[in-house]
Amino acid sequence: LKPNNKIKRLEMRRRLTLVLALATLISAFGSSFQYGYNVAVVNSPAPDMQKFYTSVYESRNATVTDNVLTLLWSLTVSMYPMGGFFGSLMVAPLVNNFGRKGTLLFNNIFSIVPAIMMGISEVVGSFEIIIVARFLVGICAGLSSNVVPMYLGELAPKNLRGAVGIVPQLFITVGILVAQVFGIRSILGNAEGWPIMLALTGIPAVLELFILPFFPESPRYMLIQKGDEKNARKALQRLRGWQDVDEELQEMRLEEQSEQAEGQLSVFTLFTLRSLRWQLVSIIIMNMGQQLSGVNAIYYYADSIFSSAGVKDNDVQYVTVGTGSVNVLMTLAAVFIVETSGRKLLLLIGFGICCAACVILTVALSLQDTLQWMPYVSIACIIIYVIGHAIGPSPIPTVVTNEIFRQSSRPAAFMVAGSVHWLSNFIVGLVFPFLEKGLGAYSFIIFAFICLATFIYIWVVIPETKNTTFLEISKLFAARNKVEIVVEAEEQKMKEPEPPQRR
Image 1: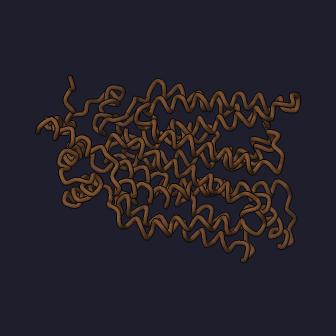
Image 2 (image 1 turned 90 degrees about the vertical axis):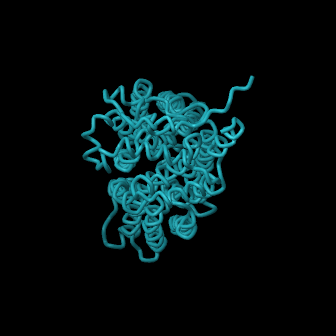
């Protein structure tokens, strides 16, 4: 090829096409948005929902004690991540049999049905139906939080994989913000509006159900797992916006050749393979660090945390919305900087900021009765914590999980990562109210230690993965795992042509 043609081909492979952009937006809005929305949707209307719980409970000739009400509410909050855990367990069998896109379409049943259940809960006079619906919509979130990044990571060219991979997290933060806005008492966060607010989660699912079928399935899934090169080629041509996709198909074939002996890996097999040992440990540590760092304690119980930080009751809802806005803006910034700064640096910066914010927040909360200006420090610490989490710990682990595993092991890896993610989320949602009562201000020091431990692990173990192929990333871990990855001599064909040096 002539130099100018090489440059043109390189630019064509790297551009963001309309089909790729729309597939990203539809799947992220239809699935990831719901994850964020349901994280925050029960925060603002909590007092009115608890009054409903009390009235229903007492209508059955029983007295509600504070401990019983706390337990019922903790179940309402924590059934969502528990559902997420079960949803994660369904990832591997569903994506291997139905495909990535097919799983997202099937998953909408776990959003539409619970949306109806929550919408009619007050009419039928049952708080149990809310708890069950929270579990079901948690299954939806558990599937979408793993399948959307997997789907988009396999659609995107390698130079856009990080940015596209963060878009689901961006929509999670948008979902959180929308729930916080709707939760303002003058909108839906009141005694009349909370059932409508809970039911709105079904709208994105309906839209995705009708629109996503018009977009392609993952080409990697079709070629490597289904052996359907014809449709894989067509999908790549639509996604890349041009006809010559032979180089990218060759890369997929090389990946397939290098892992043919492994076959499609189960979760059990994943734990036994020496060649994936440190990748597996890494996704477990990152997902535990992401959730046990306390981020969802802030979203689940934002109003009570801000109240304890000294914010006036009438102002709490607006401070919560402001925090959600900062979260969206910083995640949006991560979309644009991840390909230049890299994954590892953003993780280190994020966990470092979160650790420092938790330490200072602990000091500020313990001294706020002594020093009049300490509540402002507490609020600033929470906002700084959200900024730190938004640029690294929140969006990057799913990007890294998608990159450090190849096609045969990726579904099982996401299943493990998702299970750890949601179990940790469940623990925080269930335990934090009791932790806050028992330790008070010092509950955040636990989160600080977790952030520090995760920071150290990432610094020592996690390699930088930006702008590298899946096969090249496997080689980065091969030395640490003390194994060799052998591929065909044709590997050289998968390398992109470099533009000529200008003199």
